[in-house]
Image: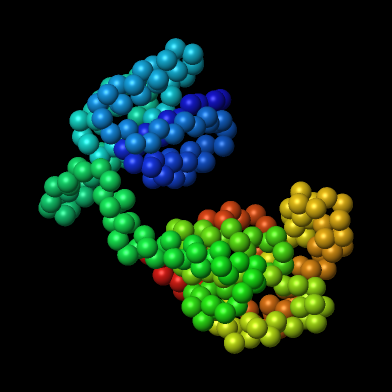
Length: 270
């Protein structure tokens, strides 16, 4: 079965996409085609959106699913009139919250974006710069300022995890790659020993690591199964010897890796 899904929002549509896709992943027997329509914030834009959905209806045997995060109640009413299965996220949650808080909602778009323009937004941008400046062991001079330092072999997910932690949560994350010299000596690099309490290890299955490296440097020693097996085995031995906690990233998304690292390290979300 195939269903068309529209994410409609007066903002970036990230909330609609995140919540909507989380719900839809529970239906493995259905194939979904996604269309995201952000910054729909006027009656004219809603009318154009409805025309798009109606045109899609004419070509499909099943109704599209429309997941909406529009703050304006009048625009939400317009969307609810379309010939589709509509999931109105704000309608589902705002009324109960208004009752519980004994206060009406402001029904004003862009409130989250306004909040982010304060110090939280600035912290996130600074954290991204920090992650870039301290990527792949390029420099250790700022490690005193790091909230966490990810350690692992090359291509185990350190860089994307650091950037995600920075962009989403304002966490200053550095990462350090274990080189062949480190691995052969089964010792934590000297420049990391002063920051032991900030270290967190990432590991990965040799099979997955080989697949990633093969796409980067096909048929090289770097991408050979023997090299991947050796590096993973030696890295985990170093983690255990130094008492560094670590997780296996083989089947985890960047979001999952970041969340597990934050929970284990006690890092606070902004």
